[in-house]
Image 1 (cartoon, rainbow, N blue to C red):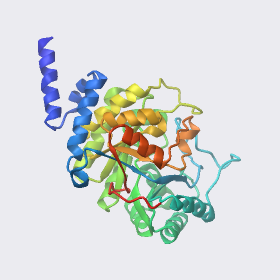
Image 2: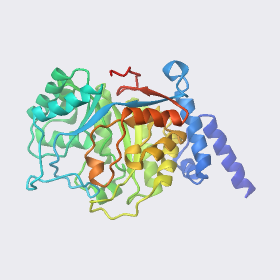
Image 3: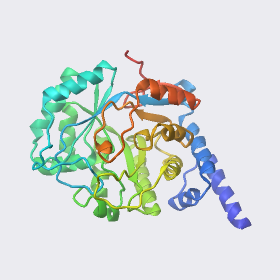
Image 4: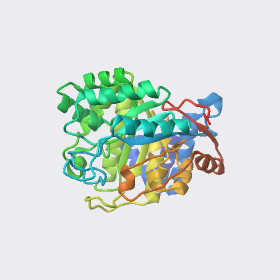
Length: 367
């Protein structure tokens, strides 16, 4: 027993020294009492943010004002965990018109929004010109709003539909107005898991390949993990390891966000996990992902109180006002917060709330 305690002490000292931990060491950290793991994650959060924002980084928690806009719900990959997608045969399928898009973005602009998270299904018939027109329209009408759009599986899908290499699609989209890429569609970057939950979607190498190409073109992105379904703990760590390896090469990830599988109205049957497991994995992610500066709390799936508590478990960002969200809400989660509520939750946790943009630069409220 004394040897085990000594080994644990050595590992804790390694974490406190800011050193990199292996996947095997992460497994050992996972077994720590939750409050101890959280304290280590909080220490690493402060270490990562110490020099940020003029030396205020340890005290600051950021958030962004944006809107999720799903330009279509038509999708032909039929992920088992998704309650949002429709086929063209369903009566409630849609593709947003430019006038509908303009209405949504006008509402976002009116509250000082600086980002639109633009994602859709894998529509089998929309061509390249449709997307370029949409991006150009947003850039012309709303130049102050960054398009944080199209997940890696979407780009893999576009490549096949357009008959173009992924890099060329990314370049064309960037020239048309794309500013950054969300980390959606990552789920678990282990092909055994992906074969179970989303067999028709881009595999792990393809997801990572899109991100590497995007980073090479100067497009920054977030990284994500959706866990608590059919994966094992070692597979979660394999996922984190692959993100860390890519970040070592490119430095293109701005932030990491993890959340738990939301089962309502989905066909995926799995043993789900709760908020305790969420906090444990977020804390472990902060320690393991030593080269990703920002960790975002997921109040959208966990609720405001757990989102607030997550600030003590390695998170330095409270995510988004998110004036619209359609995907997770279809699976039974419907939390909503306004900017004032987010700022109150951050302040009550003992931090200074600050608005940011996509690249984690602070911005002044517009109204």
